[in-house]
Amino acid sequence: MGSKEAIKELGEKEEASVLVISDSHGATLNMELILREHGKKSDALIFCGDGISDLASCIELALNDKSFSQYIPPVIAFVEGNNDYDRYPMQNPLWTEKNKKDFYQDVKIPIMQTLEVCSQKIFITHGHRFSLFSGTQEIEYTAQNWGTNIALFGHTHIAELQNKTGMFLLNPGSCSRPRGGQPQTFAKMQFKKSERYVSATIYEYIPTSSRPYTPQYSPHWF
Image 1 (cartoon, rainbow, N blue to C red):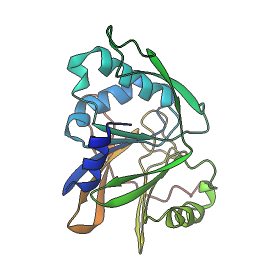
Image 2 (image 1 turned 180 degrees about the vertical axis):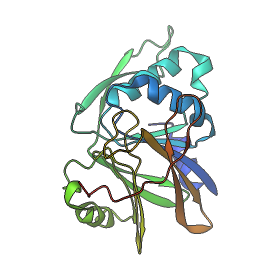
Image 3 (image 1 turned 120 degrees about the vertical axis):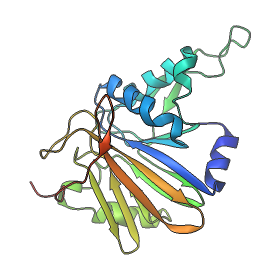
Image 4 (image 1 turned 90 degrees about the vertical axis):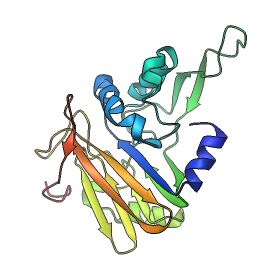
């Protein structure tokens, strides 16, 4: 989601910061506060599913509140989680009193998609179709078939960051319902076109001021 110009610019940028959120499960306020803290400094937002209605609410708030609109990154990518519908009505940003196109648009939510950032392609999915509680092999294989070595996902509600040989994996955890003794989390990624690697930081969500968080164990240990 975003203008063709913004999406093209994101793919060609020399440096970019990408905010990654997942599994909000109705906690719209959590998402809103994360955006207020980090959205303005981000070139894109990626939402990994289970909470599309929260994302839609934040987009609608931005369209009706100019002071909040500054916190919405120019490019947004999202995928359907197992608790999401495959279509959602979202307010049409082109709607005006003079241009009375549909006030709401029926937006198709993909199961998987890719986004290009600084000439690097990212594979995005929720993860409920990839047997994640048994490991990440399936999602790695699919990401490679989609022509990328960067995969983002959610579903487990446990933050995970793996930088394997030839594959970068990130699960930002859940910003509302964490598991495994973890706090509520999200993540930020940093890209540089001149460097063929990606860095990421997982953050503990705190309404006043989030702080970096390092997961202590594998999300597959239950």
